[in-house]
Length: 158
DNA sequence: GCCAACGTTGGC
DNA sequence: GCCAACGTTGGC
Image (tube, chains in turn cyan, purple, yellow):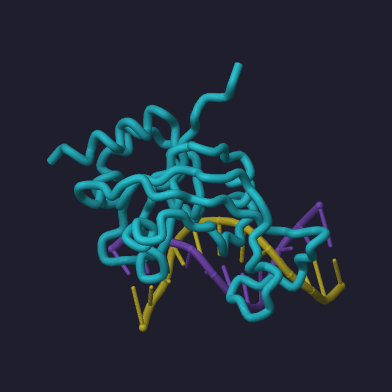
């Protein structure tokens, strides 16, 4: 049995890289993730998995668009670059610490689905939804098929 | 292996 | 800009 398509949510600060930036470049290596849990989720990703593109650290944080996973995980080049903000002196070519996946633009949502609105549906989404779990800071997190469907239904509601 | 110190994330 | 939450580091 082939594994089913899975779904994820990936955060980005729009000042750094927004859904419009992704629309412009089409495909982007998701570099700079320096959290082991987030890295491990990226290692589980398969090509064509669905991605909710989330804008964090902005006036209205929320889901701004849809993307798809365009590669399996491979080493993040920025970890080897002393001039990069993401440089990690502990990484070596033989033993890279950080991986990334390529992410491809699919579409912008008709409206940003604000975090505040998502929180109001906590009951439907479930207490285990990592995005709205208290104090959560994970930048890459899994989304169930039911949560994916529910969140996208919000796009055309209200 | 514990845990204090430190750094970062990200909502507000 | 503030600060709660939390991950990582490193001394012991």
